[in-house]
Length: 263
Image 1 (cartoon, rainbow, N blue to C red):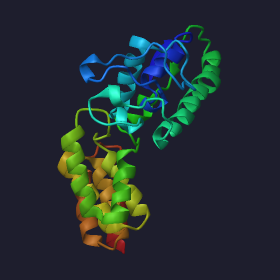
Image 2 (spheres, helix red, strand yellow):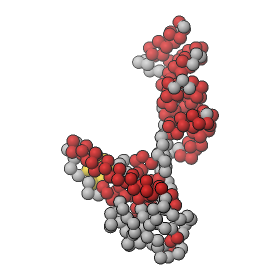
Image 3 (tube, one colour):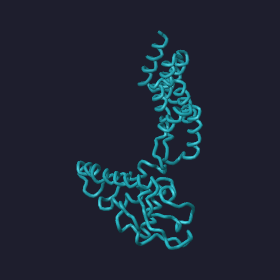
Image 4 (cartoon, rainbow, N blue to C red):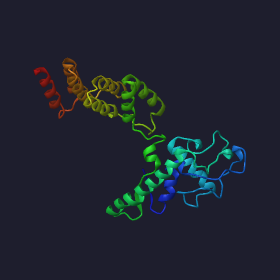
């Protein structure tokens, strides 16, 4: 999210919502080096009339950066020669979908978040959403745990682990995906609740490998192992966890150990 003045909200939105909200006329020039954004764009349906020329190019670059895409994602054409693109065409579905999205974001900012501004007593500033709020440089804004869960369902946990490693190598340090400690633990707990114990145990092992040992991960892993009928493994895991746990956590680990020993 970002903060902006109320009067500048629409122009800020234009910088980030989506490349697909742009429809402009084809340029007269024929090479990428000679291309210039038109002063009289055609087929504008959601962008204001003053988005033209250099401002049009700025908006385009903002959209492309926010979604991690190029012009052909939404517009008819390909390659670096923008002069050959048919920007005015509504042929591509992504462009038509984008018009719905820009209206959605506008409604969120102007109708819903403006109410929060009023409640907080703000007069000049408010929090706003833009396309990058959700997309985070991805054309499909899916959270990492949901993406991995989908891969587990379709291709198995080993494929999901490979995918995680690949995504971490590509995106670590950015904000496209959450690689912080605890994300995989949450996914492991979710898989355990679905009784997918093998996948949950492997995902929690990946958490320990990538982010180190922690009481919360051991507590979750021990719980999954216990539900899977792996009594001895669960006791061992809880014993490892209790060594790392702060004083306030230790009774919870001990309670689980005592329960398992009585079974």
